[in-house]
Amino acid sequence: MIGIRIKKMFSFINKIKYKKFGKRSVIYKPILISGKKYIEIGNHVFIRNNARIEAINNWKGQAFAPLISIGNNTSIEQGFHCTSAGKLIIGNNCDILPYVMITTINHSYDLIGVNYNEQTINVKDTIINDNCFIGMNAKIFPGVTIGANSIIGANSIVMSDIPEYSVAVGTPARVIKKYDFELKQWVKVGKE
Image (cartoon, rainbow, N blue to C red):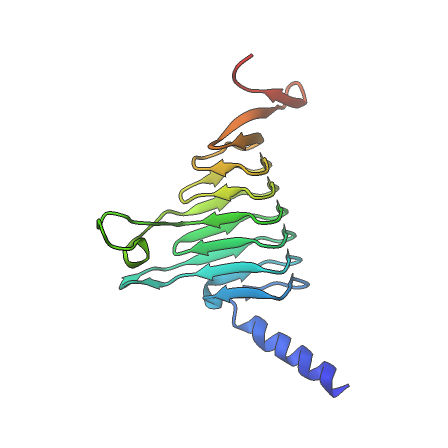
């Protein structure tokens, strides 16, 4: 009985280190999380094992105000990787499949002959709106906004904005379908 109380107390203490940690949310170990005070986890969030979630407030003398926010009822599968020195928002009711990478950071490479890990970083906010589905191994780069109710196909590399109610696939990702509210169905986009 004492062991259960200690485990619950440790779990509570661990959760209060976050900016916000919602009710009935679960993060499975092993996991690497840094900058918890910049991370908001909504209610009923499920994050599987081997995730890497990093909020970076300082890099090589550069100061940042990071925020990683994961909305309510969002499910994230194993091997998730996200790093943010800016605003990284994942909306409510999103499904993120295994090994997805989402970031707000690009390393500079302006100093020739200097390892990129020793150079400054460029930061652009990245936003995934509500009800999105992100397929396995997708990569979402800095500055991207994915509109609500959109689907990103497996192995896609998203480097530009995706409108709401869209299906995007490929490298780089491009919209192949949009939902037509008049026809009440998904319609192909582009070449006929």
